[in-house]
Image (cartoon, rainbow, N blue to C red; front, top):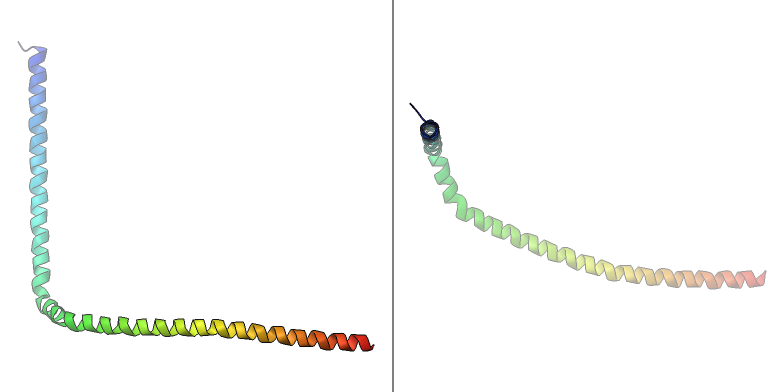
Amino acid sequence: MFSINDILIFLAIFIGVSLGLTILVLLIVAQVRLIKTIGKVNKIIDDNAVNIERTIERLPHLTESIDRTLTSVDGTINGVNDVFFETKSTNDMITTIITIVESVIDIVARVFSKNK
């Protein structure tokens, strides 16, 4: 008859072989799907080959255009910074003028309040 050890060994081998076969089937399914996906990607690339070539040909012009745009933006930012700092000094000057006008109004108000 069969001993418990023989049955456990048989079960271990059976489970191991079943898991191995399951993993093998899953790998085959994954490989088939990968092959289909690669086929679709190749078809997309073939269908758009002309557009891809045109895009690659335009890349140098595009990079030059981007470079010119960035240079222009840099100049604009520098101009904005200059205006900002000039505005700051103008604000200081306006504050000084307002302070002077307030002082003059105070003096005039005191003169008129003393006369009454």
